[in-house]
Length: 463
Image (tube, rainbow, N blue to C red):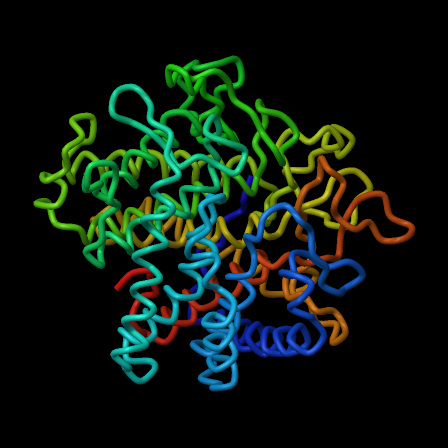
């Protein structure tokens, strides 16, 4: 169980944040110097050097998004120039990519961050460039929303790259693409010029994810633990009926793959923030009867967020760094592993620090949201839980200080069942390596806390 430190503050983390972004700048430059873009997108490191893995191109936005965040945190123009140049040069195929569920990862991290910087006055406003970013975001949200499987009861979901039968938990963070596109006044045009509301479609997807991928301790199945998250739900596309839980990267459908859980824990609180800014009139204009008004929708998203947050606090080691799956078989060989800090150098199961970086941001956002609604005690618990995890990640053995290692966040894993992750000589499990999403989310977490520590405007994906 996470041992929450209630004495940490964002201001107390300023020395760690300074060090984080100093290291991040070195890693971005090292990657830029050694990576050949013709090889594709860097995904994870082997022996400290980036390599790629052909599954889907879902990490390129993180690569260039890291540079954009680095500029925001440090003011160093060279990182902005690089991130903007590469976004314009290489990211267009991601905007029109009809085959993935990753638009929130790729396009919000690049076009979205650049637009946000301009809207916040952190870079000079250029009307033509702003229109370019906004057009990319409009199209991205609509393309993502078109990847649709309809369910009974006016629900549905953005299906994963596995096909129309597959609902991934990951995709809740791509709802950001729909949110931004809707905020920009865009719609998805369907057959016979049907105008499909992107807010409505995002809410339908979020409710399907909440209903089928998140558990609430109500006896749904033998392993129904409140706050548990399944990676994938499988449906019969002939009639839309739910068939079973599944997983692609976890140990089993009846355990929790912790990075899949992290996407839910981060995705719902940030959508709470966004929906809180949406007018009640926009909710009332929705045409789907199964969707509630604004108050009930916020209540539902809060239910999901709190369940996931409580599970994280209860089911993680005391320092909040998770092992890659809560039911990984080797954990039975590790006595009282939840009662001590996670050990990335053990001989049985790898940790996944990328899940911690994603989850920490979700805990902090949930805590801030609750405090803004007047529930200070509960909000403070989640907020401090997020700070506790963040502090652990900002230091060794998780922060990479080796000047030759190209990654920033160590001890992340990609696909344990497929044995894709590098196992160092003399060890039995993967350790010591980085992933592109781990680096990005560590930096995004750092940016969130840096802004809070300096009393700057709160960092959100939307304006």
